[in-house]
Length: 162
Image (cartoon, rainbow, N blue to C red; front, side, top):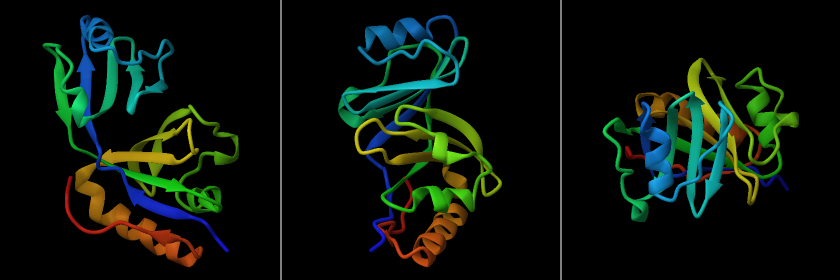
C-alpha cells in the first residue's frame, strides 16, 4: 500500500525580512537564524531560511506574531506538504533536482513544474514542504493531486485560498 500523502500547510504565516536589521529582528523574536545562505533552520514550529546576505524568509505559527523590523513584509505563499512512500518518485516527475540526496533540514530553491518554489525537508517526519506564490495554487494543486492519485496516494487538499 502506497503511503504517499499530499496536504496543505496553512498553519504558517510567511514574512520576508531584509536589510541590515533583519538578523537582529530574528534574534529579538527568538527565531532560528541560519548562518549559511540558502539554508534553513526550524524550531518550535517556525521555519526560517536565509536567502541572501541580509535576507530571510520566515514562516511562523500565528501565535509567534510578526517580527519587529522596518523591512518585514508579509508573504502570500501557498505551502504544500508531500510525505510518505513515493514522494521522491512524485518529485522526479516535477523537478530536475535529485531528491534522493535531500536530507531532513535541507533547503532548496528550484523550479517545480515551471514554477519557482522553495523546498524544505522537515526535520521531524521528513515531509517535503513546497512553497510558492499563491497565484499558482490552482495549477500546482491540480497537478500534484493528479500525480498523487496516479501514484496511488491520497490528497487532503480542499479548495480555498490562504
